[in-house]
Image (cartoon, rainbow, N blue to C red):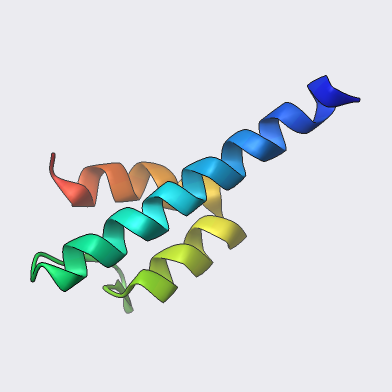
Length: 68
């Protein structure tokens, strides 16, 4: 049972970290912005929603848009 929940917990932790990071960067005046066609990801809520709904696309996109 615990092994089956491990991926879900990992995804939840990753999404929570992304939300915290994008919120902190926005407060510092360094927002993480990405554009996909007509969709612009520029707020913590849009990043959170994207990661929850379609994490396979938005998590790697966040890593690229963040520009370590």
